[in-house]
Length: 134
Ligand SMILES: [Zn+2]
Image (cartoon, rainbow, N blue to C red):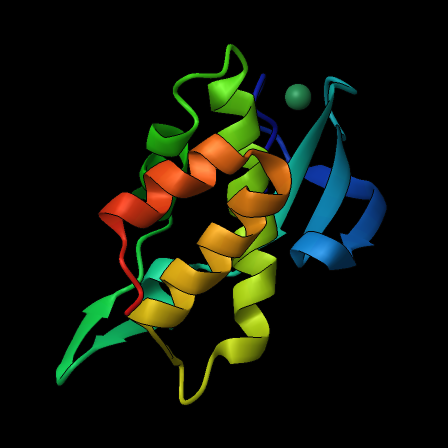
């Protein structure tokens, strides 16, 4: 990866695997201007994961998940940051349920509702109203 400030080569000076959210964090340093910045490596779920719903298959969208979580948290002042963090929590909870690179739509809804329930009961009720699982 090239430097975001001057475009020259960079080297990795530190890296950490964040197991809980399945990301690799890397601190990079520019060999020319010495600037330091951080990169995050994560699975490209849009390309790697399909959602099963009846007989249909569609690409998983992290953005769709984030928006549905955000929508349920609108009553909170910290809705954006809460939704971002909870989306990562949902994603890491989804990984064990992936089979043949796909996951049932209802499983995503159940897991998302359960995680919202622990965080904010009003949000969970709101989410369930728009994502019925039965
Ligand atoms: Zn540079």
